[in-house]
Image 1: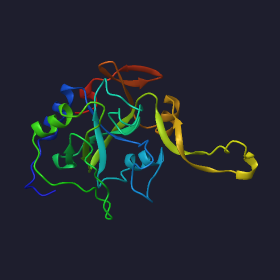
Image 2: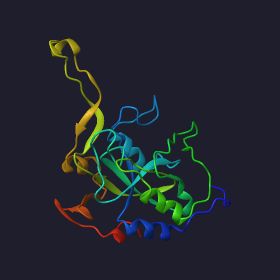
Image 3: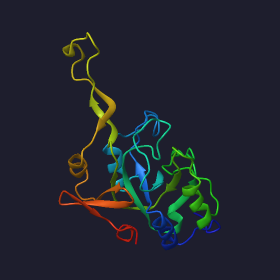
Image 4: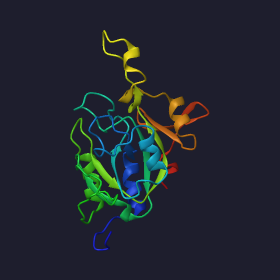
Amino acid sequence: MSLMYQRPPVSDIYSLLRTSNSLIVHFSGIAPGTGNPGERLYYPDDLRNVVTGGAMGGVSCSVISPGDIFGQTENNNNATGCVGVVLGLLSPSSLLDVHAGDGGSTVLPNGQRDANPKSLNLTDLQETITGRHRGTYNEWVVGNYKVLGIFIAAPCMVRAIVDIPAPPGVPANILGNSRGPGICYETINDVQRDFPDQRIFRFNVREIQEVNSSVWVHAPHNTIYF
């Protein structure tokens, strides 16, 4: 990003997030249209691609806080999914763009996330959190990121490749082994199996928690973003 577009220092951005115990999370999308047509990966491959650095050109994230809503009706969510990758910034320019609502960003043919280049200050970032409308999600576009862990929220709904049941009245043997995109529900054990090397976080009332030997414990914000 050109130096003409200013960003706050990463430490200041993290301090802003800390005031509301917020996390920057790229979610595995639940909606059928989430992602790029013809190129969509499904859980867990979509998140593994981010974890292994395959999306450094930029991903769409939500800034979420304790008390937010996940996996409910289509028009009453504060994120596009329930399971996602918690991301940090390697430099101020890792933050490509921000919106208080859905910015509608997409991936360009070169793998870069399209963004609206402009200077941003802390007030601009704060407004994407406090100015988010009830029951909707904001968008931070983040590239050149670092992976801090995996976030999960009940009901841990994901869109994955699943067995497709036969329609009523159609014998299952006629369809054969039919598989395709569908909704399924993950457990904490599933997520740990899918991402064995990652810290696993969730919200509980007003705090962030991390699973430690099958027990959820308090995770201070400054042990995640530092």
